[in-house]
Image 1 (cartoon, rainbow, N blue to C red):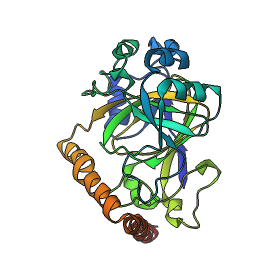
Image 2: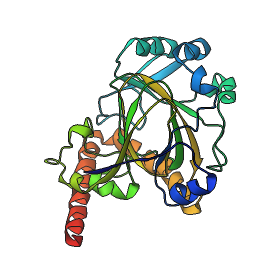
Image 3: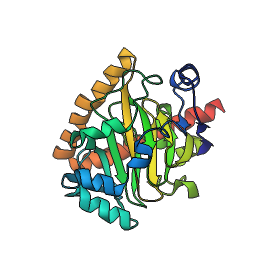
Amino acid sequence: MQVQPIDRVDHISPEDFREKYFKPRKPVIITQLSHDWPAFTKWNWDYFIKLVGKEKVGLYNNTRAGANVKVNGFDEEMYFGDYLKMVKKGPVELRIFLFNIFKYAPQLVEDFTWPDDLMPHLLKKYPMLFVGGGGSIAHMHYDIDLSHIMHTQFVGRKRVLLLENNQSPFIYKMPLTVESAASFVHWEEGVDEKNFPALKYAKAYTSILEHGDTLFMPVGYWHHNQYMESGFSMSLRALDERFLGKMRGFYHIVPMRLMNNLLIKTRPQWWYDYKRVAAKKKAEKAMRRAGAVR
């Protein structure tokens, strides 16, 4: 796998952002975008426990979904406060995915500034919180709604690996899913090119997100996240500005997901195996094309 660092800037003008990153669909980290937000110093474990501790949340472990697990099916449930107290103490391989904490504590939206000057058409009803214990992993995937993302890291550090969507065949994208058949756990120590040889052709970006870093992740980017320490982050989303992009997002959310879940329900093991075989066949074709170009 060919990996390069994600660009970093302290600040960026709207004009430069659109020309250098938004239009070409290239990721960038803006290191000081959030530094003047009240959330930068105000948001912490105890504050969230006090505000929303009594709400129940679904938790995900590091085990990859088996044949019978539907899209976004969580592994266990816990009170948010109890989970945060556990995470605060030390490494926990459990994470929260897409938690709308603002639904329960709407005053939190006053603690940050929407970056409308950089990214128009932000979905202001759906800011989302992501929380993970040290050692927890969000396995390689891309967001099913195909949105642009502004992802700000708060407590803790997180290692991210990104790939443009056109790299899908090289990382073994499975049909009717937004998931890769390959494993990227501890990818920084090497990926499994023996069982997934197409990975050597994949082109990726990486960085470690620190407190206050805001990652711009364009539509359809694959991402694999590893929580180096217990921490949390917030994602702000904007739909693809192109009509075709919006249609692709609708296809992913409704017919594609419904078909995948139907096959998981009716023919779980066959579908589980078929997806992986199909991913390998597409990867082999992509490798042959890449070899011919070289």
